[in-house]
Image (tube, rainbow, N blue to C red; front, side, top):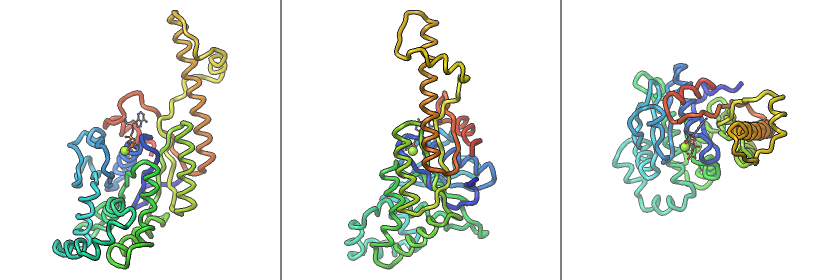
Length: 306
Ligand SMILES: Nc1ncnc2c1ncn2[C@@H]1O[C@H](COP(=O)(O)OP(=O)(O)OP(=O)(O)O)[C@@H](O)[C@H]1O
Ligand SMILES: [Mg+2]
């Protein structure tokens, strides 16, 4: 079984709204519980981490949100400036290098540069060390934007390596790209739902990560899976009942509701089977929570699956 614990960098990716940030928070909680110091790096995201950890809103500065968990919500323009300053150390140098006429002339032309600012900053935090020589963070969890864009995000270091002239920026992108391709250091966690469209997109995403990008897949997190309520015989009985029928009778309504739920469960089982067969990677199944999932309690419950 693949384990997130020994990785330095984890991409959490998937289609919009499938639960990437929730999974990043739950995984962070699990890793922190096992002694790791974790940074969650979000990309200009709608801020929900504060609800998940019951802390103050998380902005573009790194803040501690729980024991051994830190978070940051990266804004591309600020990240680029900060990244420039971090890499070059001397504040004045940032101006010289990044606001230099020549550099300025090619920067906007570099595809994905603002993506790289966010990813590069997250990567940079894997290289930081504390005064006693330890890594500042054992693991950086990168909460990537939704798939189409998320895939662009994964492509970015390679693009920088290919198109940017030699220099600080390219040297970093090369180092980061080496880390991102190394299965000992990096893993991609793909989040999906047991539904038709998310599954289809996930199969494409996994194919691209494996084929085109040759990046190390970590695990598949199938989120929002309904717990099975019925036995096979109950399910068979419910199958004989139409799901569109209506009645004025409360008891019948309850049975129709059960029949609908049975159908939904069956669809989920089929989609789960399809995504597991199509990706053949280690996986976790996360339950659908019949409560607000953006609470410390829910994140704690989901973390037990990692
Ligand atoms: N297992 C679950 N059970 C119930 N609700 C969930 C579960 N996982 C996530 N949710 C809820 O689904 C919504 C989307 O989750 P989340 O914000 O983590 O998705 P996302 O993939 O990060 O979205 P985006 O693409 O917008 O960043 C949230 O309201 C979240 O609380
Ligand atoms: Mg999110």
